[in-house]
Length: 534
Ligand code: F7E
Image (cartoon, rainbow, N blue to C red):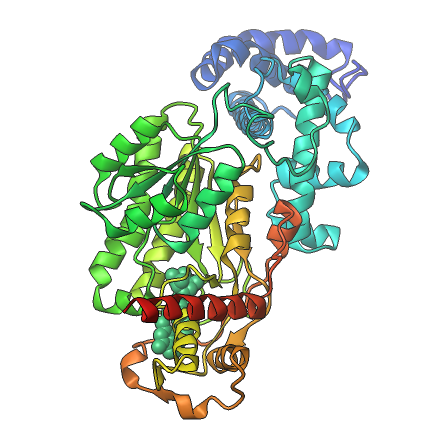
């Protein structure tokens, strides 16, 4: 075999004297290498791979061992090239899939990877340096947001926000470059796209339809009002025969159409989704009283946990291929339970402390799973305590406002509570339903903490409520009893809603002391009216 390579433009090879020897080598091994590669590569590429194998042999002819080892050496070369080829096919397929995801399947990608690469490069040139960098790290290098944050010297939340903006701009640039987009897609889309209110943008030409489970609760009623104000047709799901609360909803929000269904019955949910054909489903239905969940744990798991799964199944089945139904899950700060950090964010680990909390964790992950498995636009709102005059009397702040009202009217002597030391981040329910709606207007689903960032102990709630009726020292009116305590308690909750502020543009507008004062005032009127009636 030759001693040194000649200059063939491929970076070395045998001199002309050895060219004949190479011809013989090629003739001896061509068939074996061809059939070896044919068994390992596709029809389209095996010819290329064989050519590459002999190209390497040509360049490295100086080191090819003597027969019979030359065949083994050549197989070694072939094996490496086939493996490289497989890796590159895999990488290209993965990149193509990721790209299709980034483009939200708005266009067919060209078959040629080289053409695709040049289109991507052209679109990337239209982005700012920051957008370019974040897309390169998250999409092409597949770094997690935390890893990308370390590289960029910012927080993972900032990466998420930059990435969302970059991918929207990339999509628009790509569609503009390839000419595949519609007119609207060509305009560079804003980072946070809130779908315009009904009327401005018909949902496929129809009035948008929303389905709300838990319509009879505080949040269901506020949300229904909000959506009706935005021009939605609202359907509220009610459970059981002659549900007494249905009348309340009909009196308060007569535009809502009520429909029978039960979160514990999948076939009823399929029928409801089929009948309503909603654009958006808000799953607010749950056994929501934490204390009760300890005495009815199985029912709680069934309604508040498995109920989420059933609703998502109904949406998956009815929505079918290219599912357009968007889903909101009422997750909760109770999932943080025994908190692992203060304040709690979307990345704080869960440690629920009640059957209610564990059921909600199941609902949270089920929502995430349907998003990841079936590409359903499904979001979790991790809402901290929120209240209003419509809050149920079983919850502590309403129990207090109502008792204070009754004490001030001389209708009650003592208020008996459980643990006075716990604290909660309280907001106004009217503000929180706005966050729910905003989540479903995003291009991408997500999970969001919704909170005020300020926490109040039960004692502080007592201070505020009694002060509203002019009582500074409430001790003579308040007793405690173990009956109102829980087997396991959640001591301290306070949320950080930075992500909701940044991505959803959401802000809490009403402060808790104002809400509580209003609740006391409202309860005084209610109790006075009741007393006069009785
Ligand atoms: O308890 C303490 C009690 O039942 C608050 C639900 O909307 O918010 C709510 O869950 C705190 C607890 O609400 C009484 O031990 C003292 O530490 O008003 P609560 P919660 O358990 O925070 C979350 C976000 C949800 O998702 C839930 O659905 O107050 N506490 N004495 C008392 N609580 C009550 N209810 N009654 C008392 O006599």
